Image (cartoon, rainbow, N blue to C red; front, side, top):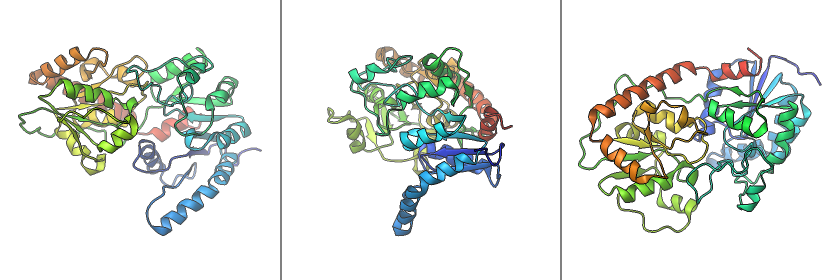
Length: 384
C-alpha cells in the first residue's frame, strides 16, 4: 500500500507526553509540531487521576494498536520511540509491514536485554553483548525490564537489510550501534532536545554553608550512578549529599542496605517541585551514570543551571563528548582520587568559575544548535 502523503512523518511512542524523560521529549516534539498536518503523533495516554481519566486511559490502551497500524500505513516515514513500551508484537508488525521504518534510539536496548547496559555488581558499562548474539546476558541472568519481548533476536536482520534505520542521539552512541550492527552502517545523529537548557544570564548565588552540598540529579537505580554517590557520602563525612527520592525508592532498586550515612539526605522531589532550585543552589551536581548513556536531560539541565557537574566519563557515553574543562570527572574505580579532586575543587573559586564558564559555553552552543529536533528528525528521514 502506498502512503497517502509521502512527506508525512508519523512518530509512534509507547510513552506519551508526561513528566518522565521520554515523556518530556515527546511533549517538546508535540509543541514544536503545533498544528503542522505533515507530522502525526501516536502515543499511549497517561493514566491520570479520577474516573474520567481512568476511562480515557483504558480506552486508549484498547485502541492504541489499531491507531498505530492505521497511522503507520498512511505515513511517508515512521519514527519509533521506546519500542519496549510498544511491545515486540506491535513493533514487529510496524517494521515488517513497511519497506522502511526508523527508530530513535533512547537507550542500549538494540544490543542489551537490560536496556541500561550495566550490571549491578559493576561500575563500568557492560559491553559483553555488543557485536554478538547476546549469550552473555543469559549467563549473567539479565532480564528485560519491560517484559516486552526479545528485540535483540530480530533487530540485526531488520537493521542489516535496511528495513529498520537507526537514529542516534550523539556520536558515541552512533559508534556503539556501528560496533554492534556493522562498521559501515549508516547511522543518523539527531541530538536530544531538552526544554529549559538555556543557561540564565546570571547563575543563582550559592548561599554560604558550613558544609558543602552536592545534589544528585537522577533516578535511584544502579545505572544512573546512585551507588557512586553513596560511596562519596561515606568517604566525605564533612559534605552533605541530597538525593531527590525516598529511602523506600532506593531499597526498591537495591534491596536491603547497610544504614545509609547520615550525610545522605533523601527528599522526594522532581524538577518542577524543588529539584530545579536545589540544582541551581548546589555547590556541585552529580550525574555519574554507569551505563553507556546517550544524551541525558539531567546532565544538560545541570550544566545549564549550575555549571559544576560531576560525570562518570566513559568512551561509550555522551559524557566523553563534553569538553574536559566543562566537567568534573567522577571515577568509580579510583574514589580516593575522586574525593581529593572534589575537595580541592571546592577550595579553589577561580577553578570553579573557569569550569562553570566552560560549561556555559558548551551548553549554550548545544541549546542553539539543537533548537529544532523535529526539523532534524525530518531531515534525517529525508523529509526536509
